[in-house]
Length: 565
Image (tube, rainbow, N blue to C red; front, side):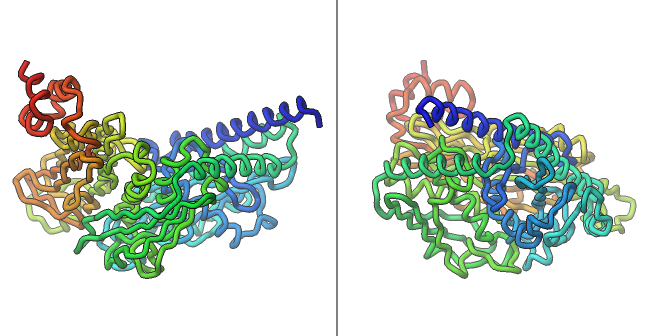
C-alpha cells in the first residue's frame, strides 16, 4: 500500500468513527424524545453506546452520565453470557435492572439489542435509563437489603423477535406505582436501540462494510495508544488521598492509593470504611465507573471514551468495604458515595499534576424523591384534605469546585453531568410547588478562583398539605474542601421552613402547612484568596453571589477598597 493510499484509508476510518459517534448520539436523542420519565427526558440521566461482538464498547453517546456509561460498558458481557450472540434474532431486546449486572441500582434499566446488516448480526446496542419507580420502598437509603428496594429484573427478553413478552410487562406493571410510565420507558429504551441499529445499517451500506471488526480494532488501537501517551507524561509514583461522606448513621471515609506507572494507573481502596446497613453501598462496577471517569478527565480528557481508553485504569477494591457491595446488600442510592470518587481521584492526582485538577465540589446530586397522598398520609384523616397521590424525583445540584484558572460552576452537576430539571416540568406532572429556587450566596469557597455557588430550594405542595421526602443528600457534615489554600465550600442543609432541621438521609414527613428547604453545598475554592482579582470580587458582590461582609473578611483590604468604591 502506498503512503498516499494508507493516509486515505486512515482518513476514511476516522470519518467512519465520527459517523459511529453520530449514530449513538441519535440513539440517545431518540430515548430523550420518547421517554416517559422526567429523569430521562428532562435531566438526561441515561447512557447509550455500541459494542462489538466481543462485548467491547466502541463508542458512546455524548449525552449521558459517566456512571451509566462506564458501568454499562461492563454489563453487555453479562447479557452475552445469558444469551449468546449466535442465538440472537432481529427484533430481540434484552433487559435487566440487576445492580451487579447493570449500573448499580434497581432504578436503572439496561437494554441490549442486536444490530443486523445483510442478514447477520454485526454489533450490539446498549442503553441505560433511570426510571422513577420500580416499587418496593422507592428510591432512598432505607432498605436493609436489595430485595426491599424494588422489583428485581434478571436478564430476560422483553421483546422476542419483535413481539412483546407480555408476561414480563404484566410483572413490571403490577410491581410499580407508576405502571404507565415504567412500561413506556421500556418501549422508549427499545426504540432507542432500534434507531441506532437502523442508522448503523445505513452507515455500513454507505461505506461498503460487511463487519465492524476492522473499525473496532482501529478505534481500540488508536484510543489505547493515545491514552498510554498521556499516562507516560505523568510523574510516576504512589499518591494517596481521602475524602469524607456523611454516611447514613455514621460518617464514611474513602481512602485511595493511586500508583502511576509507565503504562497503567492502579487505585487501591484499602482502608475505606466498611459496608453500611442501609442503601448507600456501592456495587464494584459503579465504583470502577466513577473512578475511571475521575482519572480520565484529568489524564486523557480528549481521548474518546471506549473499552480501550478505559483499559489502562485498574481498581483494587477490598472485600467488605463500602465500594464493593456484594449481593444482597442495599444499594439504592449508591450514587451518594460513588459521586465522591472523582474528587478522591483528583485528590491523588493533585499531587502529580496540580494545575489540572479542581477543588472538591458538592458531588452528590440532590435529587429528592418526593411522595404524597394516601401512601404517606394513610386513609383515615377525618375531614382534612389529602394531597393527590404522586411519586416524583427532581434533579438538582450544588456548586462545583474551583479550577486552576476558572471559578467553579454554579448549581451544576459534576461528576454526573445530568441537567437540572426545570421546576415547571415537575409541577406539570405532580401537585408539587417550588416556591423558591435560587443561587445560594456565600456558598462558594473563597480562593484565587472561587468555588461555584450552591442553590436554595423551597418545596411544598398545592395547599401546603403533608408530603414526604426520601432524603438522599450529602456534604452536610463534610463540606467540599478547597485546594492550595482555597476555602471550603458551604455545607449543605436540610430543614423545614418552620425551622426544624432534618436528617440528610432517610424517609421524613413534611407536615401540613410546612415546606421543605434544601440548601445545597458550594464548591471549594482554589488558591490563596488574597490573590483574587479585586475586580472579580467586586463583580461577585454586585451579582449577589458573595455578600459584602464575606468579601471583606475573605479577600482582604484590596478587595474591600474596591467594594466600597
